[in-house]
Image (cartoon, rainbow, N blue to C red; front, side):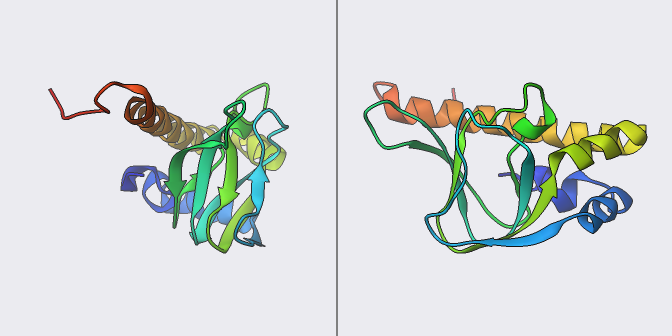
Length: 152
């Protein structure tokens, strides 16, 4: 992921500090599933250490990995948009330490403070745009006759 989508680069210090104040520190063992596609998105995480992969369900096959996330990156954006259902799955590929956030509490903070809400929405929007691009490239690598190829 690009540095502009990590928590440190995406949010001004005062918004970042406000968000981290409500975080819980959590850990996931290697192989743990953080969430499953189609389930309720009621929380999200910022990776502190370790690697989380995002994957998509493929009937009759193992999940296809779309992207790997590391330090400072947002795990989960579906909590921000109705109907608040995960669009992908996520798994800890290594032991992971992360900040966990309650989605309802963060959405309430966004509603109460328009500047904070705008900053969070812009950040999440950048993450979504980046992930869509990454998914497109990954699908081209998997299914196009010659992979994603070079830039034209």
